[in-house]
Every structure is written in C-alpha cells, then in structure tokens.
Amino acid sequence: MMKHANSVWNKVLYGALFGMTTAAVWAQEAAAEGEATAAAPGFIDIVYGGALINLLIWALIALTSISTIALIIDAFITLKREKLMPEDLVEGVRGSLNGGDLDGAIETCEANPGSLSNILMAAFSNITEGYDVIKEAIASAGEIENEKIMQRVNYLNLCGQISPMLGLLGTVLGMVRAFGGLAEATGAARAQVLAMSISTALWTTAVGLIIAVPALVAYTLARNYASRVILEIESTTVDLVKVLRNAEVEE
Image: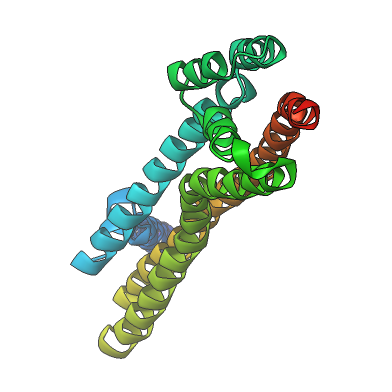
C-alpha cells in the first residue's frame, strides 16, 4: 500500500515537473517571438531612423523622384517632332519662297515661333551675305536651338546623378548609426539598433538607384532624339533656302 502511494506521488510530481518545463519553454518561445516582432523595423522607423537627418535625405530623394517624373513628361511634350518642326510652317515657307515672296515667308515664321522659325529667321537675316554665309548662319542657329533644348533635358541627367548620391549618403549615415548603436546598446537592443540602421542604409541606396535608372535612360533617349530632330530641321532649312541661291545667281 505504501509503495503504491509513493508510485502515485511520483507520477504526480513528474507530471507537475513536465508541465512546468513545458510552460517555461512556451513562455521563452513567446518572449522570443515578441522580441523578434519588436525588433523588426517598420516603414516609419526606416524613414525616420531616430534622426532628423534621415527625414531630410528622404525628403530630398522624394523631391528628386517628383522632379524626374515632371522632367520626363516635359521632355515627352516639348520634344515632339510636330512641335519642333510643324508641317504647316514648312509648307507655308516653301510656298512663299517658291513664289518669290520673302516677306511672306518671314511673316509665316513670326506667326509660328519655335526652333524651325528661329533657324529660318537666322537664314533670312543673312540673305544679302551670300549662300555660304546663309548655311553658316543655319548651322550656328541650329547649335543654339540644340543648346536651348538640352538645357532642359540636362536636368534629367542631374536627377540621375544626384539620386544615387543621396542614397549613398543615407547608406553612410545608416552605417555610422549602426556602429554607434553597437557601441552603446547591449543585449537584444543591439540587434534592434543594428537592424534598423542597416535597413535605413539599404533602403536609401535602393530607392536612389530606382530613381537614377529611368532618369538616365530618359535623358539619353531625349538627348539623342533632340539632336536628331535639330539635324533634320537644319537639313530642311537648307533645302528651303536653296531657292535663294538660285535667285542670287539670276541676279
């Protein structure tokens, strides 16, 4: 009877110990999960990062992103061939020059301001200097118009160059904060500070590159397209003023 009672109490004791051990393990796992959840930085933590300089960098990156989108839209609108070299202007000037009406051609250019009109007016202003001088004036005016266009397109290149630099700045500051946090924090807080700082560093670099790639691609395409259209305008202008050379020979 005594042995049976001891056996029962032993079973109860073992059961209690097993239950307490299991509960302790569960509690440790729950605490570890809670610490992991708390250590994971959210978007606000990544953007802010515990320092106002991070907010400033992200604000500059956002401004660069908005500027890139606006400049791409502007280039798409302003660099249209129909806008730089309207067919109505070409046909109107050709008709006036073929009819010997130079004043009519000038009035047509004044009524349709733009790159083609400016190059044509440069040619007309040197009408008394000879055909060779006219061609030189066309080439000079073409370079000026190309420079005017490229001054706006070059801002895309600026955005493409500055956005990864801002990302790199965020990376450097994040790494500085990470090493500083390791020196100050202890225990689980060290892992949290390190994770937040590294996240801030990597996200700024990634976003900077995401902005830089389309900006540089758009800049290259816009620059090449603008140069091609300006060359076409110069060629069209030379073709239009050929009739002036014939008139000069007849004189």
